[in-house]
Image 1 (cartoon, rainbow, N blue to C red):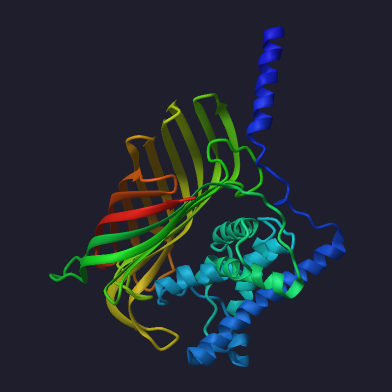
Image 2: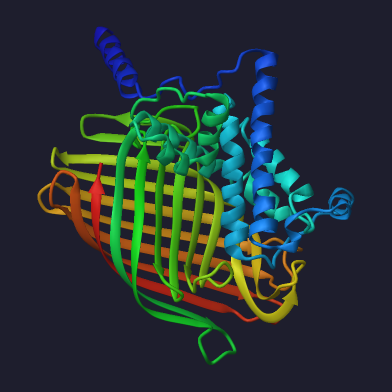
Length: 471
């Protein structure tokens, strides 16, 4: 009996020790209806400033006639059903609107609202943009991309801003990380809380890649797009909070982000945003050699690579998903560690790009032959690391997504799209902060469509050399 009590006490003490990263700064802190209304109005006003800024830029700088709304367009958007806009550029739809959602989300968090509460500000900001932010007909998919799609990146860049502020970065640099939090500080004298230092890992890399991209459509002899050449790349990998010792009900006390961009001017681009964050998690295993966490995570992923431009990328993938996640670490010795991270679940809103070779004039007067698919599906993501201090670090990942088109969301395509992304890399440390390495990346997209429309085959292979700075 005494042995059982002693073991229970040891387990309890360990749990209290390993989860000390769960501070209270990120909890909902508003007190009373008056404070809630006051800060809610501030967050709404800042969100509307985002809309006015984009409207003014589109009309006065970009010179777009549709940039400013009219009385007729506002009346139409209030009185007629919203549509699925499948002819807009993929980057505008899936990255631009998501970024707008990030900007609406930040003021909510900065004014004391929590993760789920801040969805109101992304949804309100997105809805008002669709109603009176521009002259075009209101779009259902743009609303989803801005509101729900903006939550995960919004929380990530909210916490990255806090981390940068705690590290002492000057205000102009932190403003670039999250402009709306910088504006909040400037206009309201808001001072970010002292969050401490929460990065488990942070790496920045510079690389030189060689890519070979192919895009073919059944029934056409020539490639729709082909590229073979070099391109420079910059990227970062951030692990916020301990992945393997995480027990919390506060969303995104642990998240992981891989963000990179490569570009060959006028010929090729490579944009990747791969992320996951725990909504809640538990750590059922904690020993001297083995640690593991698991829980429900939100995954936001976007990949656009191939032909440069807002419309013409070759492999286009966008996914908002809820996954069950397991993160496991085993120490063979103090110098040798194995890590495994698995995500499996449901993509509740995804998008791809479909080549129809049939011209349609959209509501902005542009002729389009590529269309966006919107759908839902399944996904599975696996990451493996074997790190030996003397011999170097081997990393591998395999990501798979399948998406079925939602009926009524696009002019032409019906069917299934799926993606496979595989990556293997080896790196070796030169010093405490610098390492060099090489990697091989393979991407594949397949589209199978009904109604007589052509199937698609897209692939991209990349060999890359890189140098990494580790914090």
